[in-house]
Length: 248
Length: 324
Image (tube, rainbow over all chains, first blue to last red; front, side):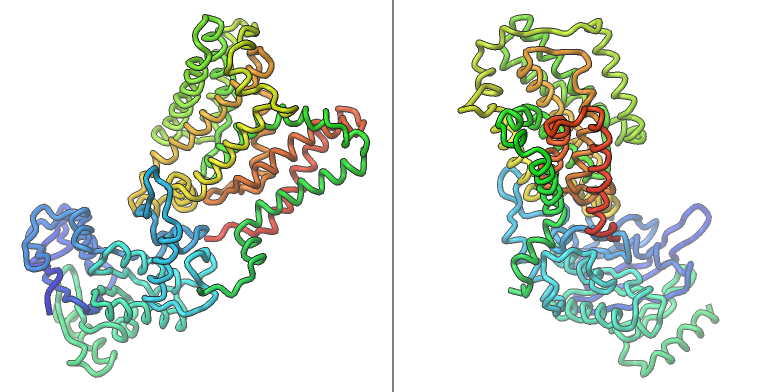
């Protein structure tokens, strides 16, 4: 499989604190990578480096096999990396279609919006990622949707923005079991369309369920990378996590 | 496709607030009709409403944009007079009225941009900063004119007069201009990128910013639009009465704001309705004249204005709280 993004020995310091220490990580096309680690392990620094908010102090960022210099947010977006944040991402009083096209509307000359096309495309997108309810269509207000469904709208928007890698930052936090399953269905559909997902979570069981590969982060270092096929249960993953963290 | 909702259900779901305002307007008309059928049938009553109504339309519709973007402006009531003043002195100086109108509108846009910049860039509270501007601009007008009004009878013979505020088979021309303005604003608000971005910015500015919308620019444009609307209103009033008077517009401050909220636009941003605002204007304009028409003393006017506003707001509560 082709690596769509690769971080090689990336170090990021803030003053005297090393937030990331020679971290290496890659994501392949069509793969779901689970990123786990305790609070303060460097998860958010790693995400912010991936999306170009931070440039690395040392190390390389390689996109589709090519090394990128002066890594920044614009380059990250151009490379198809989109983040879906848990909250604050949508306008709940507006319709699904307006949210999906937010800031990137399809326009006629003079700025009037191609409403029909947008609605058709939004309907296609939300069906593609797995909305099945007949009561929900592109014109439904986001405020009527559940927490999991709202994640779905944000994911659909990322796909519309040509995302190759969608970073989901704790998408199942504070969601019920049922809602978590919905988010998993969305993620599986993203994978089916040959896009990749980086799934960040606190809950090992959630991460275990959905990911193809796990990356364990501790105190700024990638301490373990393991394929799902090499472990049998989430408990085993938890055991590995504890061991590596203790040794470290 | 995925719709199982009925046509009517859909219509109400999407336009509940506008339909609510239409309902209140209808009730008010019925009350007046029953209370004073003779006065109500007289066409001159409606004609006098139609003189006032367009001016309020020009003020209120842009305010819907601004309130939906999550801001408020009070200074428009003075911008109204400043723009009319610029227009009046230019006409008085013998400059072509067409140019004077454009200059007046430009004045409104510039004032709107200044108010917007104070609030968006210097981060002053929109309520307080625009209150300051309201007094400051009015003060400038009073100083410049020494509280004297300006009469521009000479405009009577110019084509702009008959085209803008002349008479068309008994209807004042400004009704047609206001109607065109409403239709344009309806599309601008719900089908144009500007209006859509207004909704996003008022709903969740953090998210709008993340998605690449220039939140500050959108808000400043909304303030400019309010300034332009106020300028058009001021110029129309000056044309209708052939007179600029230094206190003009002040009386519209609270009426215009009331019309926005009675019309069903909530104060919290992210939502608004142009059609509702038109009915809001209708309610306010008929209130002002209707009380007198049914033979009550003018002293009742404020009482009923207040009552109607509160009842309308209570009614709009039925459309629910803000969704988050």
